[in-house]
Length: 126
Image (tube, rainbow, N blue to C red; front, side):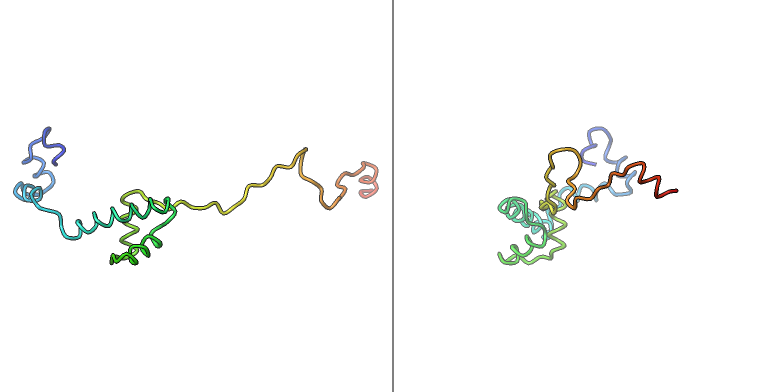
């Protein structure tokens, strides 16, 4: 409502959203709750830990560091705050690139002969 207050009247927007005007104005004057203040502090701490470890730590490791530093919160809360701030752990690649083999095709390591003569093939059929 605040962003559209220059285009529409507060009364009309409040009626559309089924809220009272006085409730909207009291909401604007309201200070942050204790939980919101704690979340802002945790977000700063999470971001500093995330940057300190070059983005490799996910929520379980960051939660462990926070717990070691004396912060009391759940791992799910840490994960939620990380999602809110778009912080994701970088994953290591779990595969290795195959080396290119020079020449055409793959190497015949067992030295099998897959080429057949037409005469041998004809003997097998008839």
